[in-house]
Amino acid sequence: MPALYNYLTFSGFLGSSQVVLFFHFLLTANEKRINGKARKYFSPKCYEFIKQLPKELTGWMRYYLILNNLGFIFLVLGFIFMSIDKHITAF
Image 1 (cartoon, helix red, strand yellow):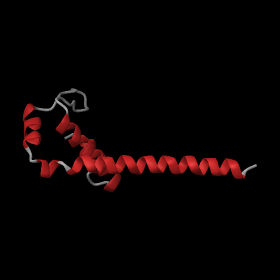
Image 2: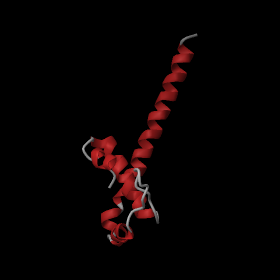
Image 3: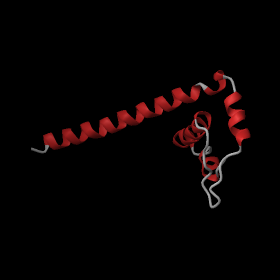
Image 4: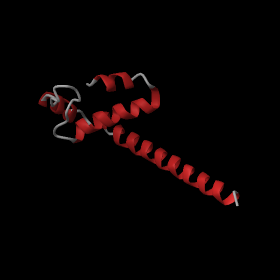
């Protein structure tokens, strides 16, 4: 696991979403590069291990990411509506 994701495990809700996204990519992708000077790929054993886990242990990641995406969409919509309201009441 790259050092950034290891650090993000201690950063609360927003950081944990990045860690979940990292493991979700490991679960769904065939190859993932480790960021660093060598730019190496993960060992095939990593992919085999995470893909052999039962759905009960990995299924929650999809719902967690959907929930985070919905939260981000509502945040952006809130900013848009606040901006529209500010410009309407300015006249």
